[in-house]
Amino acid sequence: MKLFIFTLITVFATVSFAKRRVLVIGIDGATGNQLHYRALIQKKMPATAQLMHEGIYAPCINDDHPAYGGHKDPRCARAHSGPKSGSEFQWLTGPGWLSVLTGVDNNLHGVKDNKPESLAAYVQVRDRYPTFMMRAKEAGLKTAAGGVANFLTSTGDKSKPGILDYECGIKSSFWSTVKNSANSSCNLNVRMANDNNSASRDKKLAQFTLKQIQDEQTDVIMSVFDGVDHAGHRYGFTSNDGYLAAFSEVDRLIKPLLEAVKSRAQKNSEEWLVILTSDHGGHKVLLWGLHDQREGEDDAIPFIMATYGTKKRLESLRYPVTHMDVHPTILAFLGLKYGAVSGRAQSENSF
Image (cartoon, rainbow, N blue to C red):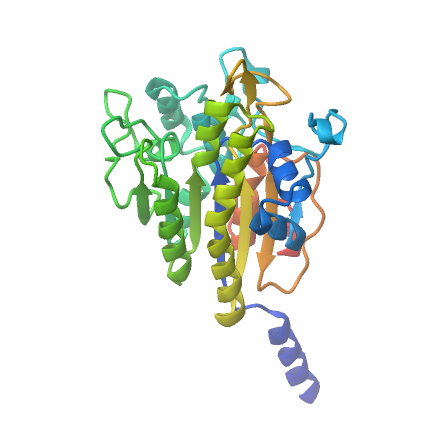
């Protein structure tokens, strides 16, 4: 009898009853090599660098940057297949974030670019390839997301469609049935879309994200910051002052978010998974930046993940790493099933 009681005590001591929560930090248009250069070499992204040191990441430090010799790093995380699936596919925001959300490649979700009629193609396969937000919400978890087009349908005078809203259905005009001002949707308990033209859009998003972190009822949070992509289009997605400065600015915004996660993990006995990634990379043409079909640049992205409040250390990443790994990794952490995906659950045995 004593042995039986001792065994029960041992079992319960090793079982975690802590609440598990997820934060996905999306940095739109962040090229993997420039983020790593800014964070690890120039040391101008201290919050991101600390996240990298506390977790695991796909090194992109040798990928086409002169400071690293200018050759490809096979460990660099990549986006979906893009034009490798067909000449009509591109490395753009809508297809990129949908591959993150669903865990499947663009040839499966069918979204080729950011046009409403292309985004609407996802509606045909949404039941087969649901987003991790939908899977979490259907499992009874509270979900929240914020951002601008083409992640969420943006607000303002020049509204643009957002791919996450298309999971809820479309109108005859190929636009989502979700209003851009909606505070919730079929896959989100809490929704906040911003104006693409607002200079304070990323600052407002950081405030929204912090509020969701501090709300213990919110289980899965995803926020997509837009300033880096905006700078990339203006200055080029290369190691220029304008583009690199945008990385430092988003790092300043995510610093209090990461601090809040660590604080809650310590003081509130919560277990957190944090993932940072992007939808696409980019390149430079003349004086400005583009991203479409240039392999090796437009598909080079960061992938960083860390856990806080958990008892096990994360396993090393399994390569190749893609942003399609986000979906199965999140669901594995939450103890939820995921279907057939193109990505893989990273560090699954650590959960």
